[in-house]
Image (tube, rainbow, N blue to C red; front, side, top):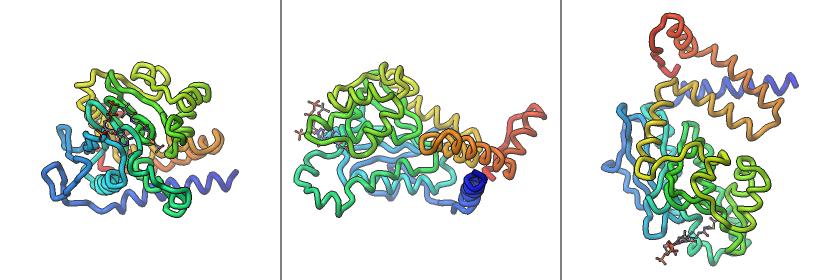
Length: 294
Ligand code: CAA
């Protein structure tokens, strides 16, 4: 057990060191930038221009997640991940569809050996690997890979007409990017079984009730609310936000005892940061904290 504590302590220290090493990316990108996206749009939003918005933009196919789209999404996430001016990322789609799943027409001819040898869907994990907080703003359909993509994000805000589902069973397959795993951890076995075995969709209100979405807002206010959430998170130390995100995610990946140890060591590690000192000093001096992400 002492070893586990040591490993966690060194992981937390590693996060702090990696964050300190991150290069400043000078180039700001927006919809008018040099990035020539085919399947997505990127822009920066919020008063401080510190919230990145990535919009899936394949409306004719209801944002079906083809290889090209997923590659662009990974690239954009990596770029925003390195950009020190960005505090949070919002991932959204159109009013009709966040994403209607993996591209069925693109994968219809895939064989088993191609899936194995090409490690199909392995490159879908960038969202889950992103160190910055990422908010899914879901309007319309979030089905199959679309629901899985939303669940890879840290927080889901749903428009009031959003629909979530894992309809792969009707295609003669099963979810392949976390639908049977993340959904089960969030909504429990009975509901996850029901959704995965029937392919039935649930609406935004039910998703909120089940804890899949943290908030439901009118569809036309969704993006604004998600950006506001990103801005609120961005008022805190980006460095400590990153550590906190890692600690919450650890709850999904380890036992309670290991998770509690990781949390405690990460809490201890915050005492090696300037931002922890500043946050507590500012409280005592009754003034707003000025975080430097150090
Ligand atoms: N892949 C490819 N194309 C898709 C698509 C998908 N997942 N979902 C929708 N489209 C295309 C349709 O083929 C159609 O294209 P055309 O105009 O060229 O015919 C266009 O988007 C509009 O779709 P519909 O006409 O079907 O729109 P609708 O409003 O009648 O129905 C829908 C909407 C209920 C979402 C329906 O499109 C649908 O059921 N889509 C498939 C959902 C699905 O099964 N997703 C799971 C995919 S498998 C997966 O994701 C595996 C994994 O775990 C990674």
